[in-house]
Image 1 (cartoon, rainbow, N blue to C red):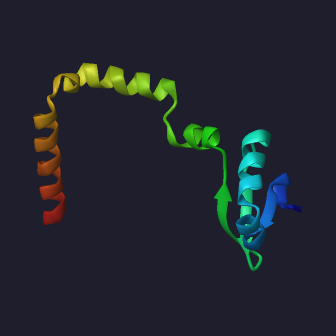
Image 2 (spheres, one colour; image 1 turned 120 degrees about the horizontal axis):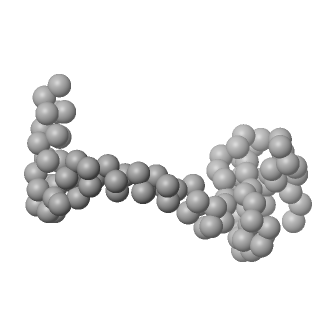
Length: 99
């Protein structure tokens, strides 16, 4: 299965190649720890990336979590119950809908 190098060395595969060789592409993404751009008719349509890379992108950095936790302690919001949090969210949404 051939991939063409795109800009910045990113591998590019056609949608047809991706559909025909999906299992091999999954193995490659996991093994090489790099993403693949999937194009349809020459237009980039999707990115295939490993679960490790996705988690890195989707999860906040530990430093950010520490800062949020300290701020919560300082404001006293770390002591809120689920019921209180839901009440605050409902009130906020009600205000937003009035605008």
